[in-house]
Length: 398
Image 1 (cartoon, rainbow, N blue to C red):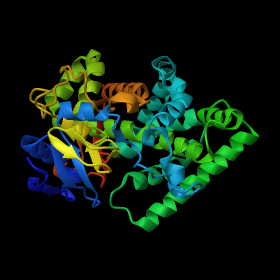
Image 2 (cartoon, helix red, strand yellow):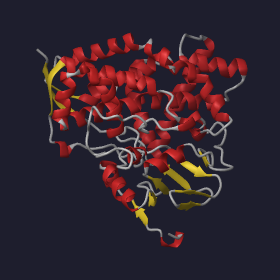
Image 3 (tube, rainbow, N blue to C red):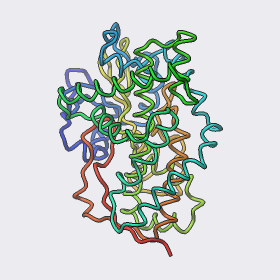
């Protein structure tokens, strides 16, 4: 197919509510489609599994546009210059600084603390007949964990939730974005200054030491890393727990299966990652030179958006992909990405989810939706696929 004959698909607000149907329709035509995203950005959307996996490891696809760098000390510099937006060799330098905090061994040591946080939240939920599962459990569990790791006050978590929602939204106004980004940047400047005066045993202090003692992080990189760790450190798990629990409620046979056999928890988490895809699309990539993906010619500087949720429901990779099957071998799913930008926090997210689902099923003998499923709304984001709220009714076990 020549470039002149390529149909450009305009993705509207309905894409937020059901990206899976859109991806399936586009993939049936071609695995790489020309689209206009809801925010107005033209992009090549990759929905085929093989094509997505290849694109995620293609060094010709850059995380920053060629020749572009944000103005030093600007708001953009404070939120853009982190490892997820970096190309080699900067990427390795930045990732190395936080890699040790998220090894499988270090994360496993957090199990008792995560279990204790979950138990406290479940205790509080047990006193009520109806709750918003996101506000009562799915959000406070991972945000408390990442706040404690970073060394920032858990009491400020509602502010973090607002800032995070703004950053990943496609529909927020420029004024609100600027206000929230400025507030978040100012917050972290104060926190980092406090760590310079009085270092503690936390991740922020470790990043400050790397910046001040070895001069390996610029001030903008330091702020950006703090921002990334806070936002990425909870968004995936919040939406995995929320959307995953909704998927189980809508598939009662699989929910009963998991209740009857808790040993399925590990494979269940993998299947839920594949099925609900907390991160809908990977962050933007930019063609550094002419290249071909899935038979489509990509020109330099064009945006390539790899659809993780599209790839994870590609029938050429997973049979009957729109069916939730907790015993499915979901290995190889791209929920956490692939290649050098594979999610550093994947072991932590998996552990949090395992503890969360296990705790919810053990504590409550019954959980049902408190509203019709078709009334639930999804956040206006092409990056994150997550619910705005999940009202449920609870009946304690026993």
